[in-house]
Image 1: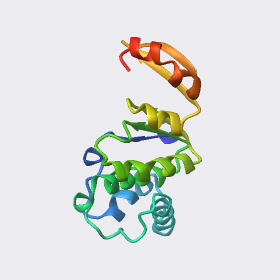
Image 2 (image 1 turned 90 degrees about the vertical axis):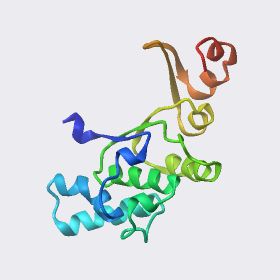
Image 3 (image 1 turned 60 degrees about the vertical axis):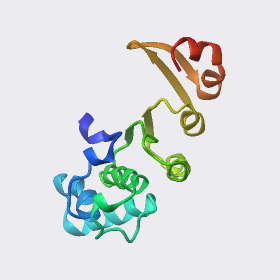
Image 4 (image 1 turned 180 degrees about the horizontal axis):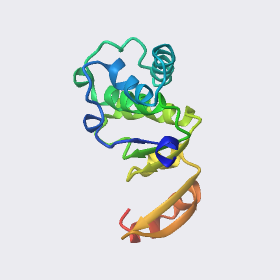
Amino acid sequence: EVRGAVGMVFQNPDDQLFSATVYEDVAFGPLHQGWGRDEVRKKVEGALRTVRMTGSEERHPFHLSGGEKKRIAIASVLSMATGILVLDEPSAGLDPRSRRELMPLLQELPQTMMLATHDLDLAAETTERTIVLCEGRVVMDGESGQVLRDRERLLAFGM
């Protein structure tokens, strides 16, 4: 049941994208969930619209920029209609422009999101709650603005 409720977006989209076209990558999950072709098409169109990649359906994923690949990886999870998104280092490897484009996209998503990130600015701009882990233990937990302003403690924990 958990696998059906949680969608994982990998740090490196090349580890997640494997099909010959963007459409096939985004459709993979819904097809294997048992949806019919028409419903899959609607899910793919909706997911691509959400990540602002409409018109890229026939492009080869490996010919996309890093930011485009990241958005297609997110779309591939959104197409499965999961209620929770787990994103591993969503801004990793992105140039400043792609990172700026990603921020509002993440803020607009209605799903519950969990970010694993070292990008404190991304965390501050996109999350309500921040949990800081150090050596596998929770060392800080609270409202993002409050936790991320505690410079002294963040430095003490290697942030």
